[in-house]
Amino acid sequence: MRILVTGGVRSGKSRHAERLLSGADAVTYVAPGRPAGGGDPDWDARVARHRGDRPVHWETVETSDITDVLAPARGPVLIDCLGTWLAALMDDGQLWETSYQDVHAAVAERTDALCDALAAAPEVVVVTNEVGLGVVPAHRSGMLFRDLLGTLNQRVAAVCDEVHLVIAGRVLQL
Image 1: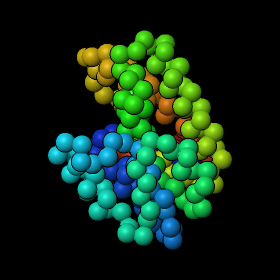
Image 2: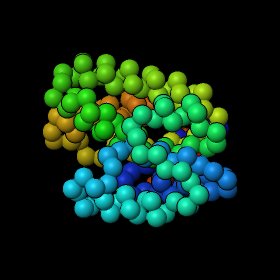
Image 3: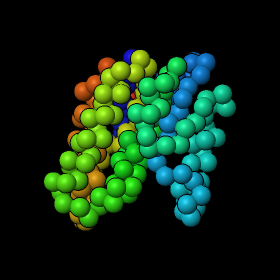
């Protein structure tokens, strides 16, 4: 079973995703964003809170190379979240100021590989942010990120068996 869990910031999507796998003996938790300790105390606190919420027997892998984790995984995998994965991809590739066409090509290539790996995974829950329901970003980087994440979410949803939308802690199965 492959499930995409989407929703706004602080909607409860991570908690819901963790509950979906709460009965599993072993879960590989992939945190594809920037690691804690990078000089942002707010981010560090968020990472610490998420770590504290997870069961101690879950294995945590902090990497943006999700495909490298999915193939050898022997049990369920939880990826939290695609928004931080995309931001890391943009940062690592220095894509924020690249032409719109080149950015889309670079992200599409990584998205293809991710979707192939997700389609082959037997049990995975993927968390992502829903960014298309809010304010139109005022800056190019915000608009670019919103557009790329919206397309990424559609592509990942297409290889998932279910999509769950979390709003105010309530879950709607789409």
